[in-house]
Structure formats: C-alpha cells, structure tokens
Length: 386
Ligand SMILES: *Cc1c(COP(=O)(O)O)cnc(C)c1O
Image (tube, rainbow, N blue to C red; front, side, top):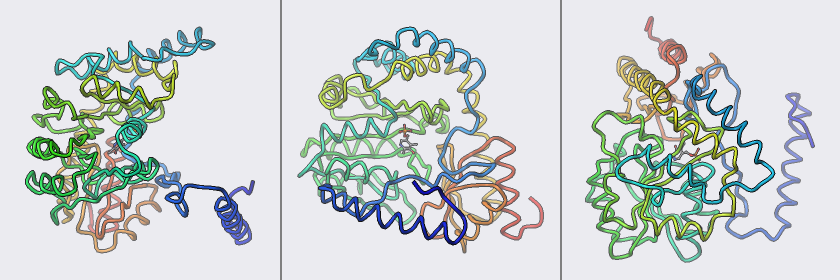
C-alpha cells in the first residue's frame, strides 16, 4: 500500500501504482461494460466549510442524538441475532412520517436511496432493458444503470434546464423504456417539477408499462405549497416515490433511504434484497430519528432561510441562481467557474463544480458558513463589500 505523498517522487509512485493496479484489474474476467470505468464519488477534500455534497450542515439535534444513543444501546443487547428482516417498526414509522394515507405495506427501505434505486433496477432493469432520465440530473442514475447492465437513455431538457410535461411525455413514448427516473427537486439544478410532468410521464408510460420513479431526496426543503408526488400514488401502481434520511434528517452517515409505492412494488424488491440488508443499528437509529422529526424540521427551516439568502445574494452579485426547492443552489453567469471554485477552496470553502459550463453548485450551510461563502465569492468577483 502506497500512502499519499506530496513530494514529486511520491506522486510518481502513486501514479505507477495506479497504472499497475489498472493492468491487474483488466486481467480479471470483469464484465465488459465495467472495463475502463473509475469508481464514482465526489472528491472528499478537507476544508473548514464543506458545501459540496448537499449534506445537512446543521447536524443531528441534541434530543434526537440522545434518543439515537438510547435506541442503539438497546439494539446492542440483541446484536448476536439477525435483525428484523422486514424492518416492520421502521416501515411503520416511515409510513406515519409520510402520511398521505400510506401504511407499512407501501414502504420499502435500504442503505441509502442509492441502494433503493439499485434494488429497483435489479428487479425491473437489466440486460435488454432501458432507463430513461433527463440530464443534467443526479449523476448516480447512469452508474446504477451500468452496475445492473441496464441501458441508460439521456432525455432532453430545454436550454434553461426545465422539462415540460409535453416534452417529457413525448420522449417517454418514443423511448418506451422499462424505467423512467424524474428527480424533483432536481439535482444539480434544485428546481422542483410540476406534478403535471409526473402525471404526463405516467400516462405516457402506460403503453410500455414502465416503472416511473420520482426521486424526492430533497422534498422537505421545497417551498410551502410544492406538492409531493406522494399525492399521485393512489391508482398508479407503477409509480414509486423515493426519499432519503440523508438530507433533511441529517443522517447521511447512517445510510437510510426509502420509498413509497403500491405493495406489489415492495414485493418485487423483496426478490432482490439481501436477507437482513438493514442492520439492527440502522433500524434503531432511523426509528429514533423519526420520533424526533419535529426538532429536525427546525433545522430544515433554518437551512431554507440560508438557501434563500444564497439565491438573493447571488442575484445581487449579478449571477443567475436557478429557483431552488432544495438545500443547495445551482448558479450560472460565471466567466471562469473553475477559478472561482479554486479561489473559494483556497479560502476554506468547498463547493461543487458539476461540469456545466459557466456554473457551480453550493449547499446551504449554517448562517456562518453561508456568510463565508457569500463574502468570499463577492471578493473573488471583485465586489467591494457584501
Ligand atoms: C443525495 C441524493 C440522494 C440520497 O442518496 P442516499 O443514498 O440516500 O444518501 C438521492 N437522490 C439524489 C438526487 C440525491 O441528490
């Protein structure tokens, strides 16, 4: 194992070992569609202000933390046994959190919504099948497709990254994919979809009997009055609404994602899940956090205030922030985004370059973190005082 070194020699050693490892990897009987791929992940750089991967910057509130400690301690006494394979208490807690008349039969969960999406692809995708989504959108979708040998189809959006009901429906009709993913609020642009788009896509998917997934990872941050696709579930048996505890619940490190759908969808996922995929510690943590959703919600409200401050601040700096219903803001109007990105990092503020020309994405931080971002950005853009 070569440890990272900053000397010229160290870098060389690292690079040759990378080439060597790639050579050895390619000798293995790897699946063809995985050859030459690099493992995906946002750079995990260290900086005092981390606003790059849309984490909840406010942490777990004290009362929820205490409840989690007690719940995990209790779970420890049974850790020699396999956990409840059906995670019944957790499904009940998630159903009552979501409301909308849902019950435990409508709920499925896994280690992050990434794993939920992977299980959906394992059950409904695969060789000879296709997944349609609408870039720029969540970069995990094509990777989950390639991991399950599902063809990934890139749909089109308008130049301003919006997606109309007519256009989306027409593209679904043309592609006739087995699966469609709509991300709302969309990552990286932050804007929520009109439910008209979901309705139109679902209707258009009737012919191919596609599974339609709405990824609502950021739903809790939406502006008041933004309806969830959960309201569309009754009577739509191929519709899946996916959620996560990674963002609003500040539990990215605990890994808990979930979905709501018709009971037969959860039965399909039982065919591909590993037995006992949710550890007793994960289940205990998630149930305890759900019991404290009220205090977690207070942090969500503060994050929304910071998010709106960012949108307003960016406008004042002459930039073009996209309307955001999430805990992050995507903004254009930058002549040199990579220079700005580096300048912010040099000042200790890490944000995300999502590779879209002239633009960057920033997560809403605490009040102090948000101030650090806005002030440094103003300075880098040559504005006197912010
Ligand atoms: C962050 C994010 C998720 C969450 O993934 P987890 O595996 O639950 O942490 C899902 N979808 C989108 C679009 C995201 O940005």
